[in-house]
Amino acid sequence: MEGHCSTAQAIRPSTALVWQAATFDKLLARFPAFQRNTVRALEERLHELEQRFREVSTDKVGSRLSSELIRISNRLGPASGNAEIGLSRSELAQLTGTTEYTVSRLLTRWQTLGILSSRREAMQVHDFAALAQLSESEWRKSDCPPRPCTELAS
Image (cartoon, rainbow, N blue to C red):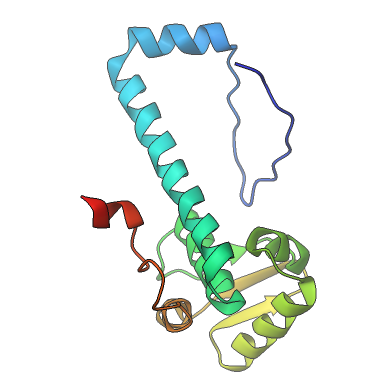
């Protein structure tokens, strides 16, 4: 398998583990539970990428941005806490396939509504229910519903 170059930026303190491919293969063979967990993690990542592809190709920008903020918030902790999302407007624009201006306009509107508070390099979500409602209200009903399309085929 060929490698690829990419960069990543953690949104909270993290520890990165790096193994050589041969070492990773040995661990997978030796520990079946590790193999199952790895496959499960890859399935989740694939599902997330499919969902993002659908969002970028069919959803309005407001829906994409609110969905991304919900995803990030869920990774940071429970929805009841006001976890700080340490991403700039430019980074959010890249994640959602839109312009920094559009992200800024939407965040300002949502801040006025009390859904979140925002500053240049970070924001906090205060009303997850309202954010989720924004995500669903802008969803295009002619497309796949906001649950995994693969569930429909089952």
